[in-house]
Image (cartoon, rainbow, N blue to C red; front, top):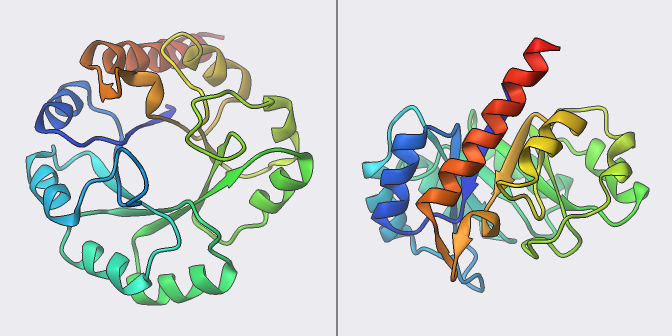
Length: 208
């Protein structure tokens, strides 16, 4: 089954919707420049509301590893997602601090070389995104042909194209944020439509 991650949740109603829809992951954005930023105290409050079967990922951009370690230690996040210029030394250092929590490294895919670089990451999982990340635009999926490892697919996914993405690419998981929003806020109906589209695509794959 394709893993589903609903990212950029910031309100109690977002968590309530996630608890009903049962994605595998949700995401809290800790990058202050993002409009979806949530402070650690708010994220902790939301995490306490979250179904314990759903894992919470923290999205960071070149963050101080000590801050990430503290959020993991406090149980605010279960997974670390890196969206900055973090290199292999950073990942190695972070892993020594954290121990078991999974590390996801995001890559903007503009060329086949970007895909090859993503394939070589020492992170537990990679996430492939549109150039620049967070643009809400689909990139050229054909560039992913060089990737041989499981990956999260992001970048312009919506309830309308998520099923096609799963059927064509068979990613480890799909990650969505702007595609399930209306006027800049998470839309419960769009969240439900996205989850349904992915699950239906999984069923079709099993029937093939």
